[in-house]
Amino acid sequence: MRRVGQPSPGYKGYESRGNDVIEKNVGGLDRQFRFAAGCFLVAVGLAALSGAWAAGSTVAALSLAAGAGLLFNAATQRCLANWLLGVDTCDR
Image (cartoon, rainbow, N blue to C red; front, side):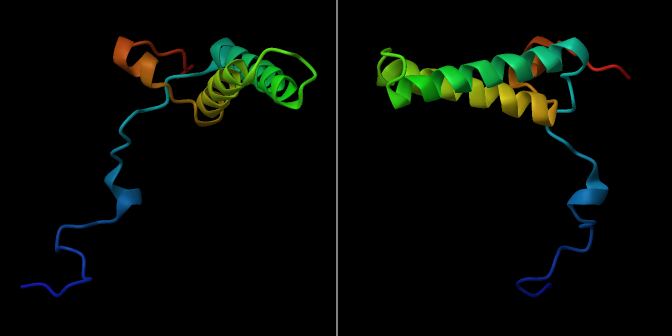
C-alpha cells in the first residue's frame, strides 16, 4: 500500500512519459501567417477598445480572442482544428 503523496510504482514523471495530447502540427508558412494575423487582430481589438476605431466592444472582444488564439497556435505550434482534421504543416 502506498502512502498519500507518493507516486505510484509505475509513475515515471511527465517528462519521461512522452504523451503529448496534440503533437506539433503547425509550421512553416502556416505558422508565420498565424503570427501575422494574430498580431493584426490583437491590434484591431486594442484599437476598438481604446476608441480609436468605433467598432464596438463585441468586435473588440472577438478580435482579441481570435488574435490571442492565433498567437497561441503560432507559439506552441499546435492547433486543435488541424489535429481534428488531420492536417500537419510541420517540416519533419
